[in-house]
Image 1 (cartoon, rainbow, N blue to C red):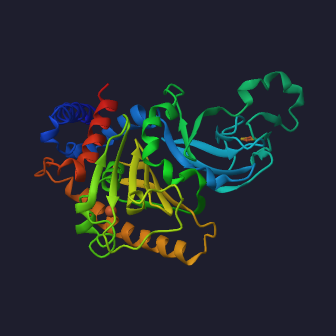
Image 2 (cartoon, helix red, strand yellow):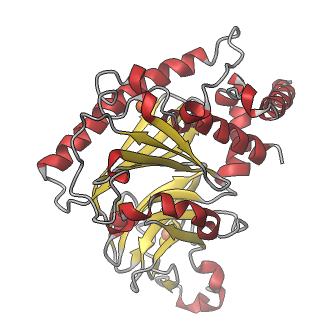
Length: 377
Ligand code: FES
Ligand SMILES: [Fe+2]
């Protein structure tokens, strides 16, 4: 009975989403509120998006040396992201082929992967090396006892995985966007910081919040308004599966260095904010890159991994610490808004709202189109 109810309300929600996404851009609006609160819709997103798309798991700077790894999860799948002996980044299943123990936790460096339960060992590529006292069963240790390796792609040092192995290559699809960030030399930056948080809001609220400049002057009156006021935001064209805008600096903001020589005078006066849907959010400033990776925990909670890379190598440099503290301040402001929004989305008397013009919320409209395109296929 309960399931049947869920099913019919999911069908209603999908119809509403199809209708809202089909509006002309002049009528751009939010997704239906239930898209942010329904667990049934989230199950659909897990299948149609998080298991089917290129999803970002981290930054290559987190695993700089051969054998460096971090364990993580995607759509309930335990994963191990590890740099192999030859320096290549790989994403392996973190589930032991013997009796399913998790092989590694947290972060670290290993030259071999040894399961703590019965000491099966694997090489860094996931090949089974040894199963103690099971030599006589060698015949059973076929390739099925190697750890599965998932499709992996590095793009601008961001590590992407595609769980179902069916997605078209990512790099070619994003190629036409590269000129917008080329002179910022994103690849040459040093990894400075990584942190983890869980916020009580739907994952899509965070994507939308990060990607729209409309809230900068109001919600960040004490922090970002003086640096990147709403009025100076400009949307930029992007290939499918992405959105982006530039956040211009107020005239009083001093130059943000050290920056790459290639940056034009104009490029020194704005940050480029972009999202590779579904889950990578990036802000590229002349001297620093802020990234957020988001994953749904449930409909009401999002897990966030966020980090910084920059032109300064020393993570303890006062400029690096000052910028991290600024990020922590405006993250708190965003968190307070988004946790309130999540309450508001459950109201029976809220039915979605209109979006501001393209420079300010056109990015939210792009995301609306993307989500509808994925879950309605
Ligand atoms: S579960 Fe890993 S060795 Fe048994
Ligand atoms: Fe914000």
